[in-house]
Image (tube, rainbow, N blue to C red):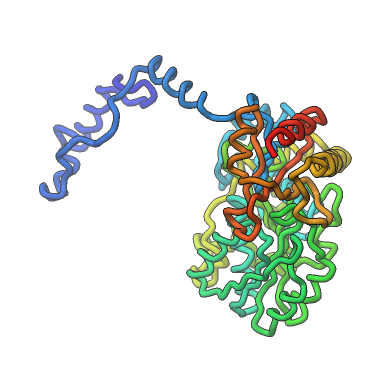
Length: 448
């Protein structure tokens, strides 16, 4: 065989051509006009032998700054957390090793049950009644939530806080164009949503208020104040949440949220240079039939044995297109399974302990770094495991020096918030040790 990973031999090729009544593969394309056929040579490198290719790929991979080599204080939407070894062991089993949704329940009971458990645990974490079987990632889940709010309320105005992740706001605005939504950003004050500005912007045309808590800047939003503003004119309250933070914070469902979305990446999914992730989407029961994607339900077979099936699928493939909530056509089954195994392995107490570690280590880091001359906190607000610092020089310059010392620094806020020059968003998770935090402080002391 020319290609060892393509299981078709020359004899296979000849047999198929014989059945089709053709002498060559080129004859299969004879209906394509000659002037439309590409006659040149593709501008791609020559093929390599397997040993040469393996060495080449290893050299390319070696250029990456992995967490095995560097201490990372970079978060901004992707976080390094403890992942028990059992997670990778389970998702690597052949019966689970698929990223796609199981459509045949009679042969997919294990995976369907795992997704059912994922839904159940997401509901418990968020304080909501119904969750779907996962979405692509947290930012697309947020954009889908805006679409649901508009469909339910029959309104087009979406109010989104500027403290929501910049990438989520970008995706929201992109999707809003197709749905005809009017997205209006609410400014922030002192690192949280400006409540007065939100009140002024909310009116009878408002379909939803979207906030993130803890927000992109790391600060905890006052959901108790935001909830009545969202509901005064019969709009929906959509909250994007870091699932780890819900181990110590009151869940959005208890504040009256209608939709809770977020990214399950912190729960058992490695950072992996930015993807893939796994979005979660949880709602109140009255919105159950508007949820994009699909829901795994529990039932009984004809013998009374418990079983699991795909129940509600409010997407264009299964119902009339004009009635569909969304055109989302898949979920992140493999990553949802990883999240399920992670939550089961840690348990309720373990997730609480993990969240407390994040909280305590981040607060120690903020206090320690704030003692450095030339460094000061950008905000004075309750936060979870991220906080912003004001430096006396450009973040890019500081990060280059930190990288030379084996440290991946924080996120430069200036690229998304021009008013905060020389500001760095620091993430401290359970994986960071006191020694690593102190080393960051020592290096910063020599830089600023």
